[in-house]
Length: 531
Figure 1 (tube, rainbow, N blue to C red):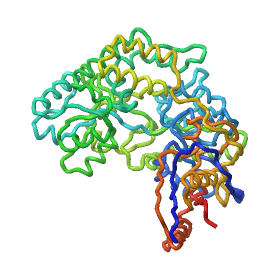
Figure 2: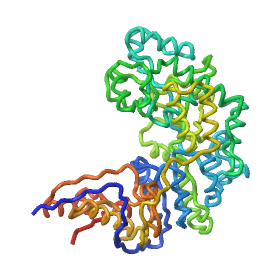
Figure 3: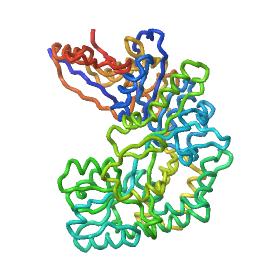
Figure 4: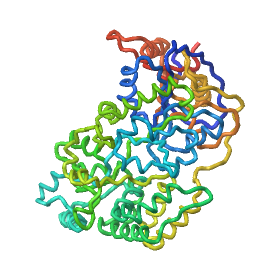
């Protein structure tokens, strides 16, 4: 008889988490290092490379979440910080409350490999540097050069040419510029991108330092010199790109096909996107353009680190572990290491000795790169949310530039986390996420919970399904979401006992070519309902 089975790679529950079981781990005297990755993309090439390069280190890799709030929640409920953590959405403002739990890396060997100007963005008032920026993602304007060539239109080199280019394409019945206005990051980046010279001025950088150093007792609002101009320029930008009302809900899936089909000339996106669509579409040669200033000397490229990396302060209590982690950091930030982090993505490096060959898509922003006109977006959690709210109200005509400035300033000084604090349930039993040779109690608990919640007979997943231990106590919706790793999927179907056996063999048995599907503990299968 066939049984319904859930092949789990994630999900969401709002019920009490049932018990599970797991064993303990014998690390054979190896140094154990836990690393939390902000996204599964970091597992692609980096984790197997690290395990091969450091056979004497017992790594535990966990897919966690791309927010500082996740780590604050860990600390808040008494969990220890992992040895190494990564986060993409980052600002010193967000990270301030974690400082006492993180090591000062300013005098380490790896810190000396950075260009000092990039590390300064992460330096606390005390002089400490607790976060190191990984190679930079390039995220600016993407143009289809083949479309430009087809209609004999030159690529713009300044803002007036950018506007004239849009007008020229619109006259041909082709949309000059469009983007996925729905997302918070698109609102944040186009808003800041429209006024980078102002944000990078002395007044702009002074305000940013003050904002990044604010405390709960001293909230820093927008200044009255730089930020009014930012909103004036963004208002003009929306007019010049011919923003159409109603497009504020436009997503990536809506924006991309017209660009690929030659119906849109320019969009906002990344160099990684430009490289991939050029390789996959014969009618597209996607190239990166900067955010334009009045002259070509005022052009800037918007960038952000692929992630920021920090080390737990407790590592300093174990000299062997501290030495091993320093060696791992040097490897990760080396030329070879950053290539494994990038995994084929076109990036720029913040490190002196690292030479990552730029892809063809970056050819038209080489002047900006050479002159160090690389702007690191301001990306605190509150800035993301407020940018989306205010930008959408500008797009719908509810706010003009002055009203947008006033509302942004009000929200940034009175920020309220939009995530609900309502208690959904109380967990009666705690389960550890420590990986043993039989998996993880937390992961086993999740599998039992999901199987019973969905009323299935069997559930099969991986130990990595749990992003943290399950604690005893009350859970909000956000905390429930954080229990499971991000961006996974659930597959359901009916399988015979023989098919289930073959699935399990595929998950655990070493293949004929010697490859082992279990590279580390959190790749061990976790099951529920199997006798």
